Length: 232
Length: 242
Image (cartoon, rainbow over the protein chains, first blue to last red):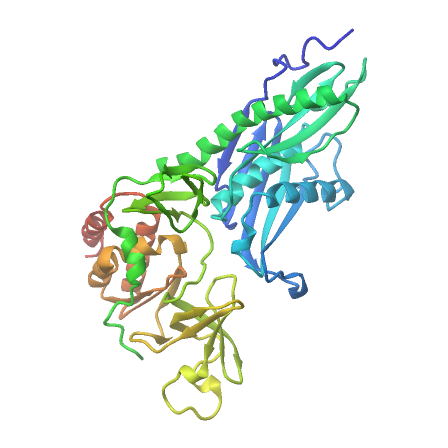
């Protein structure tokens, strides 16, 4: 039995309902929320500010620090609060994804702190986190080359689907499930590509193509949200 | 106490207030204009023929120069800016001043034209607010100066913090907005480019009125013809006082 219909009735190339907002955290220099269906991530940006401890300062360019965490109530089974291996890894890959667009040369000796918090998780948390972080960085007035959009593409059995949910990630029939979170700049450059599972090279190429298309949609939403700032 | 008759306004920042065609909100990576005739200014870069925005803000095209006026973000010091800072430390030859920017600022004691004797804290002590001018922004840190009219220690009065990107709006074209607020409230006001505003009047009510007016300007900064709106606001709020 192959995977012919998605659990939540979406088309194979359809993302969940998306929503984004900026300026949700008053005390931060920039903040944003991004939602993929049930997955909600918020991001706060502080800085550029003086880097402490000083030995971590870089006199040539600024430093970007990214911190990712899931709140304890974000998952069905309570998550033990505090940093863990998974969070550290995702923080690091988000940092790499974002550092390719943030113009750190403009801020020597400083640090830009990005905090991503997942309020509610149903897969694709790192993608929602990156999308929120980009909006937060832009709203913080940080100089950046362009925007990044992120989406997770999956292979369920032999079908390539866009924006996985937890039930799909756990699919075990046939070839099983493969989760490929990816992020693209607006100009189509890859800044994040992770893969959890098995996939054939041709299928991966196909997945990247589909991911690029989905990211266009996300970019349009990000653009819309930023542009609507003046309409209050 | 130094008199602040003259408004300490940046010529450069005033320019941002001259009227142009309606400014559009741009996002990083978006093309603003295309063509070799245009020059990329602040917050923009050139990519081939196009001028691309580097920042989230309002695209401003004045003549050939294209720039992005950011809506948010921290204060980055620039030479000539008048800022209001708080003294955080003294060294053997000057003061360290917090000017709400990522870089620490230093005010050398040699800047005092007077012959100095004794402890530096006799002039400015830790915790004092001072109005000063950014002398230079060097590789590491910012140098300040107080050799200019209207600069120096700020005594009494209140300090408010606003978004540094809204400072040009608060000052208004050629200082029109700040002049209006000063006249209406009988307060002395120094608006630092770093978003720190010092207000001093004879009565606390006046100071609070000035604060309210400034917050009104900051919150309504998108509206065109803001000076008129503030005039109306003052007229409306006068009634309740009497």
